[in-house]
Length: 226
Image 1 (cartoon, rainbow, N blue to C red):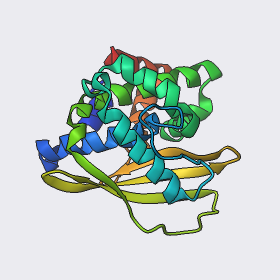
Image 2 (cartoon, helix red, strand yellow):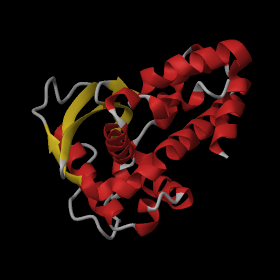
Image 3 (cartoon, one colour):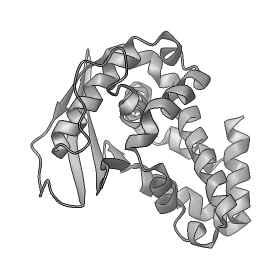
């Protein structure tokens, strides 16, 4: 049963071990790119969540690269430190409850309030466990590059396209799906090299829920997170 939950970490195996690890680095940076906000000592760029989509991603993304590069504990994959950084800097700019809700699909609609809270925490722990070790390679990332924005910047739901250039490695394409809220943009899905986070986990979660219910999914995630 738990083998289904760990499948995400093997998603890029066919592309080779090096490509898999590079993609994991980019994914984790993309997931934590809000580490450097206005009150971060390493941040140099002003972050405006009400700015145009590309400007918002460019500011927080580049700030995050600077911050993570200068955080030895995070680069060692220290999950306690990573959790602290997420709690302090990530939550205001990401709607992770929506990420979990869309990934769980029907399971979310039938879950109780307590189960929903437990599922959000378990899912977050899974992402941290899966990608924390990749931060040891963060210095291989050369730059975040934004592609021309397509669509209406005043729309309620947009996708920002980007790629990370790497030292002695191929570029890695990363897209961010965001929603407009009264507080500004909030990210709820990420696409790394053609693989959307929500869709990837939705398939795995659906099978777990069919076989063992929502509690079975929560238990399976928590067991892998230990």
